[in-house]
Amino acid sequence: TLYKNELPHSTITDMQIFRNQAFLVLNDTGKLSVYYLKWNSTRRPSAPSRLSTNEAMHERLPFVMDCQNDKFTCFNVVEQHEASNGDLIVGTMKGVIKFYKWIPKSNKFEIIPKEIRTEFIDLFRMAHINHYVMLLNSHGDVKFFNLVNTGALGTNVKWQKQESPVSLHQGICNQTKLPFALCVSAERVVQVMHQKNQPNTSLVFLDYEEIFAIDSNDNRIMSSAMSKDAEYLILGTSRGIMVIDRHEKKIVSRRNVSDQVLSLDVYRYPDEV
Image (cartoon, rainbow, N blue to C red):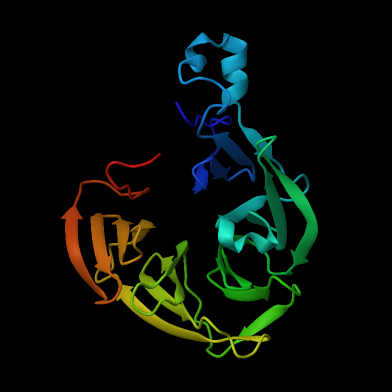
């Protein structure tokens, strides 16, 4: 078992893999647990089987990050080539952005003495794009903050609130090579295309468009996952599963099931993890 919820009445809200080294799990109590995907590289492959029970349990125990008087509500692992602001960015219910650095020797994240107090409460999801972070709160509103000077950023378009947000995905478009985000709510999917070279550091220039909307009043989006190549979005709904072509803005595959699809993930075969 890679993950077992320590609190039986808590619910997992987000999971991400950090550079094939750690597995991060956030639950609705505001705890962020870090599980290690590999045994100590100094041991021989057969070494785990010869470990004592206490040693094996110690190797598998998670490192739990707690926000004390606040709650972690979203996080984003940072690719190594973009890690100038740390390796992990975490948001809290009170709208505070915290930064952490990965320490390989101790296999832990250590906090960096830098934070952004956004006053943008009830953070739900975030996307790290270029020199700024895109924040989505639980009410469906969005704000942008500069990671260099920590200031708020305006946009060239007016954001339309997305009621009942489900998720926020980020990627690089294979055709334009531009970063983008997909904001998924219960009834629609909105694509936010970002310009790579922003001409004004106080303004984020975006192309904003709806690429999909639910066609039935009794069907709702419950979960979502993006393909590894960022070309397709897979939606879990109250009726089944749909695959959306991000460029064509249409359903390319659909499968009905007899229950709600509350969780989705996409794996390549064979998968490295």
